[in-house]
Image 1 (spheres, one colour):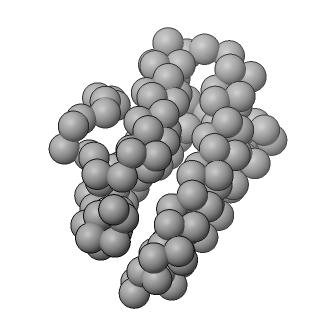
Image 2 (image 1 turned 180 degrees about the vertical axis):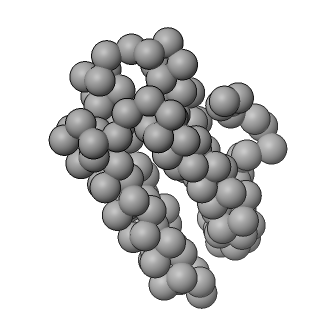
Image 3 (image 1 turned 180 degrees about the horizontal axis):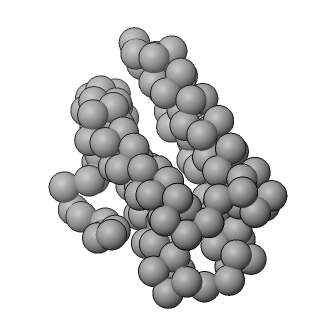
Length: 135
């Protein structure tokens, strides 16, 4: 899977873009670990990091949205909540050894695709709004 940060993924808010790049980097690390068929412990560690860091990242975005009274806050937050449930389930399945091989690879690809689409469809809209408020 071609997991790469691309400049067009930028939302124009420095702290958020730095976090997005870190998440994409970890998703790339996960992809490479799965392609190399690294140990379940290695992939579990990466997914655990992602679960924790993505939650922290979403809190950062939500803090910005609340501070600047973003009108689509609730819808955006609902998307975050749904994704956190998904990554939590993935983390649980890996720790319980219920997800392996192609299933794990496909689920990690789905996580990456969701995240990229979320940046493109939801975060960029938020970034456009925030750039008009942050001076």
